[in-house]
Length: 133
Image (cartoon, rainbow, N blue to C red; front, side, top):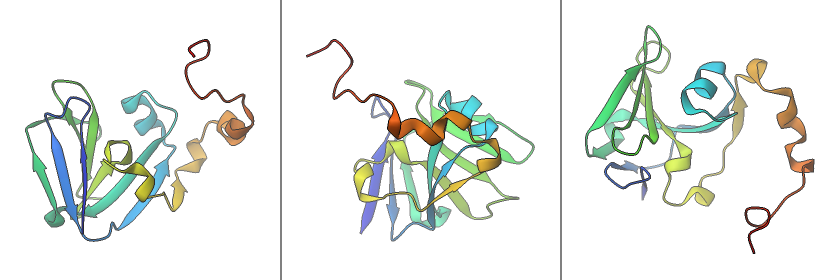
């Protein structure tokens, strides 16, 4: 069974074979600043089970960490770190073609979690952008 995904514009797609190693929501400052989002979902597979179509742009976000993204639309896609995650490719789970099929199993780096995220389910919820019917 393959899991698939792609960037916003479709220039880069990916496919992963078999079950993922993990799927977690990351709250770290590094992911937050890189993505521009308060938290980021990461789903991981052994790199040898992932096929990427298209050419990614690369940003070295730390001494050992490399982040890959689409140079056309800017979608963040992959994180690799041979020190912390040898042989693993972390893929932003927001790029999954079927994100409902792979719910996360953990939250990580909660020491950096923004305090207001704990009450996010209590905020008013709108089915569409407010004012748009």
